[in-house]
Length: 276
Image 1 (cartoon, rainbow, N blue to C red):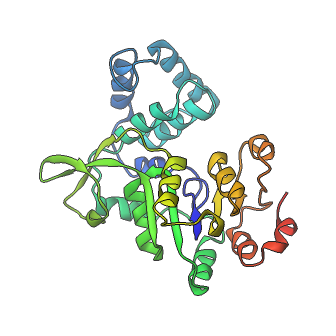
Image 2: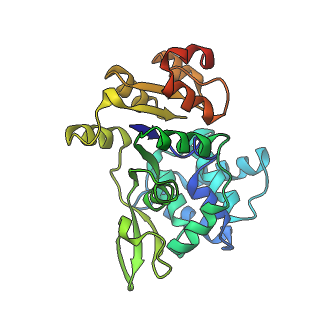
């Protein structure tokens, strides 16, 4: 089983940011909304509104003025990874809020225009030719993971559960809704999704065997460590924080070319020709 991460592996950046770039909404109204939510009851209740405002202004000094929803999406990601005032919970809440109103057919059209990582299509087609099942497990939202599953004929797709608006009601997204032009993203995610625990659940249900997994990820060391400790192949790719991978003894592919991932899976003995 080929286990794909998505953000930072199949494409650069974050899927929610790419979707936000496809919106013409004014970012200022979301900034004002999030300021009001800081310190109040809810997902941003433990964030100091002054720290939030300062961090955004610092991001603009370090990067660029926030003029579009895509800019704001990048800033919200960096509030976690670069500035350290957000946790995963805060990022999921704010970035999904930006996407309210996007239809599932629009989502597919936007993702069609996102550049794939070098070698991705060659690698995924090669795995299919060799009869290897493929699965996406990502913190990106479910509709994006399902898009890639359907687009490239993969076997499974799992991601952050999100709510959609169907017939005027908010309901959880399901795969049967794929590409429906009448269904919109509600801008809200369900709490509690954890990639590692989800993978363990799939192992428990005997959907996957960790010994038969070849996993690739840019960030989730805990996933790769679990796979490696249980006899599978685990590889870091497009890694931003190498020290974490080194601490767990996870090999890192030297080049951002997914054809190398394919070569290693097909010839594991050659791993150190391509990794550090």
